[in-house]
Length: 188
Image 1 (spheres, rainbow, N blue to C red):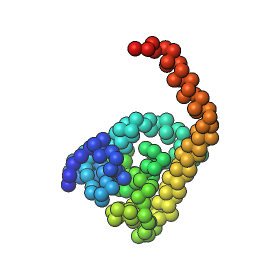
Image 2: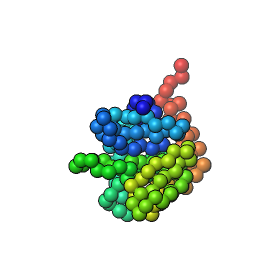
Image 3: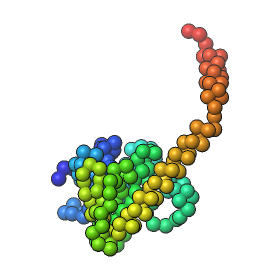
Image 4: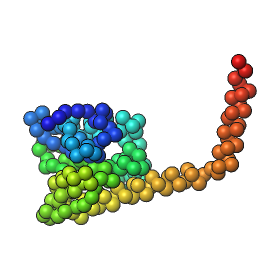
């Protein structure tokens, strides 16, 4: 398996999956190209590194989403932009205490959920990857619903910002800034 770091592949990552192997707790990086790359860090460290690569504060984001989704506990989706919302899915069994079992998939790449048993399903991605998930199809669909609620929340925020200022107000603000700069900066 190829090794890499999430920071180097940040724009290609569509999922992170916790795995336990000969290197201990590691994370598989699922890429748009359907390639899988191993990051030697645990899934929580990889998630934080991915967010930091986009200058995102996950703690502040989680507080914001708790208020928006009106719930507190359990795993939460996270987002890098309106187009990149990652939903949590249980992807492995607990090996030891405080073991991370949830991975995260980009909502835009989830194609279909296939039932295996009452506690297992397959998530098919649009790039042809198939991932076994240790959740029922209903639970996986619930996580997907939460992800869509996050997208709605983000779209509402953009609309509120867009509705908050008219084109005329924006043009007036730009003219004011330009005239202020012209007064402060002497002609050369």
